[in-house]
Every structure is written in C-alpha cells, then in structure tokens.
Image (tube, rainbow, N blue to C red):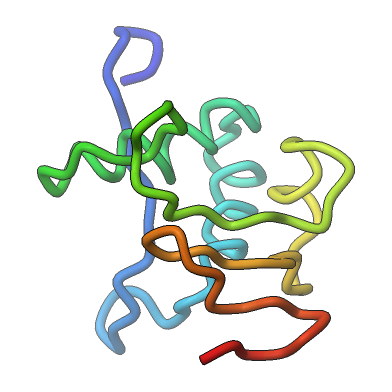
Amino acid sequence: MIEQNGAIAIATDFNPGSCVTNNLQVIMAIAALKLKLSPNEIWNAVTVNAAKAIGLDAGTINAGDRANIVIWHAPNHQYIPYHYGVNHAEKVIKDGRMIVDRQMSLIK
C-alpha cells in the first residue's frame, strides 16, 4: 500500500478477539519489526492517518489546533518504535491541559 502511495493507519482497539494489548508503543514496535515500516511511516500511521481513518481532523501540530499531544522521553522520533516494553510518555496534554506528568504523577 505504501509503495502505491496509500495511507495506512495503525492502532490498538484492545479486545480479547484480535488485539490483546492497549499499548500503542508495542503496536508501533510490531509495525517496525514485522511490517518493516520506517519510523516516519509509523508516526504518520499512528497520528494523522489514524485520525483521518476515523473521520477526525487531528494528528498534526499547527497554530490554532487543539493541544492533544504526548511528550515523549526520547532523544528523537525514531527511538520509540525500537525501544518497546517501557512507557516513554513523559507528559500527556488533552485539550490544552496537562493531564499526566510522570514527574508529578496523574494531574486532576
């Protein structure tokens, strides 16, 4: 599909029938190791392509966008798919409000 310029999306829907993990980092690692996707292909697949697959205008960072982002404790974007089994999410921001900060635990 990628060679034909198709957009692919990857995600986890966490159900006992077909996806027994809710860990997106594991899904990203599987995409790298088994599907041979590059880090850039993986990040596109879990962000903008995944959002478009479910009809959302999201997955990018632009001026005026809602701030729904994860800040990763990683040296670069290539690190995450290849270093699975550890939660690398440092901060989670939802609608412009920080809801998780690993240094401060869960913020209410």
